Length: 163
Image (cartoon, rainbow, N blue to C red; front, side):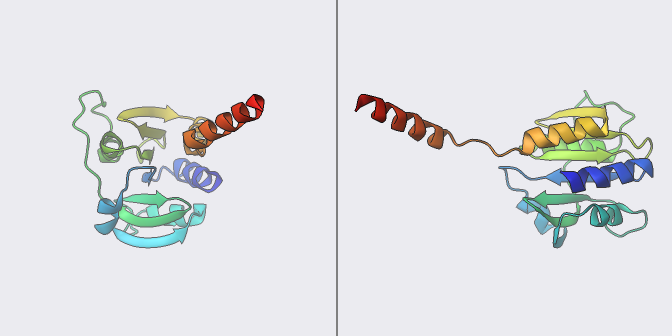
């Protein structure tokens, strides 16, 4: 989250457009197959350089799987939602579009305004502060507790009380 947030901050300050999609439970392999494969450690420097103007990978999106940047130049479906402002461009529409098809998290830096947005579950949260983005990412990427583990722990406790 730190590396991603640092990159977003640098991109925002320079008004460099970016689209970063973080895979969660639903696979993004179909999009990875059609993009430039990288498989690199997540670093703010790499993310900023990918989106730097005139870089051949600048126009597509970056896909992150786990702790790796797996591809760049990815093309995502754009949303047909009428709820999205006409002022927002292709990056925002693609961020919303991919969030409508699965459970990924899409981060957008607006090239025109430098504003930050997050799309999740078919909803676009626009004009967020860097701190809001960090908090959302930390919350959404926090490991989920296993219900099976919770159940077996509770069952173990009840076994002890029966003895």
